[in-house]
Length: 338
Image (cartoon, rainbow, N blue to C red):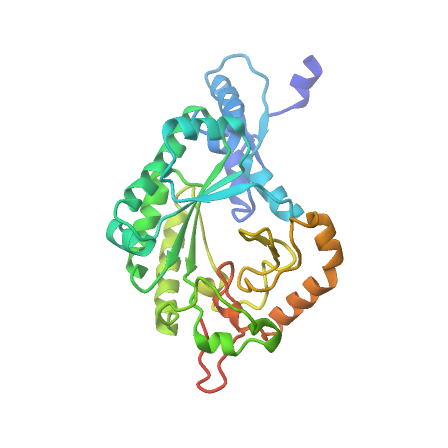
């Protein structure tokens, strides 16, 4: 034990070292850099050890491998996590506590689409905004009370022309609730023109819940969203919240499909859909086969579908609910379909 004490030496100037590479995630934090309020970074045990150390109680110098290091590893290793999307309406204190203690979820995503009147209008009912925000705050409070890092809390805002001016308002909600991340994404709209531009093999029996909505966001509206996002991004750098957005918002360009081959949708009848924007294209039924059997027999089709998507031949990709692509340009007016 004596050798361990002597072998670990406190970083003589931790702040200076951290500033030398501000863009790199903080993988390690010394006890002297933490305190009892550092649960989100160091976990409950790490934060308590740091607090004891800083009270000058005889504790060997040491460090904590941070939550950010875990997140970085999960992302780079391509490890899938378990998460749910919720409107928060059924999330009370008892349910939140059970959810956190069970440790079955890595992330919980709350959809907040603007001020109360806009959220209620877009989400289809009076009072749903209040329930969503209450559920968000309850989960955050119980999580801190139990000193748990999981589940991470994400807030997603889907942008329509009605709520573009509410972007900073939602940022403030996410910040106040100690959310780990806020993500902005544009709404999806499937028009008749988009459907008719699909390859014939994908048109048969096509129907989507996004069909029939008003026309997609204009280029001017996308630019307004981008300007708002960049201002909020600068503000978020002063706080402990990660702020993200669709690539189409950040740069206006996205050529990759981020869903096909990585994820899948299971519809209400047990059919496995390789693409959320092609609800009429199934690769098999879970009632008849296992997931492994279905995917092993459909590898070539999935690879083909991904190539078709990234070649710009699937018009629905311009309205993808995961990450919109910018390669889908109408032939007549030269206007993007997003």
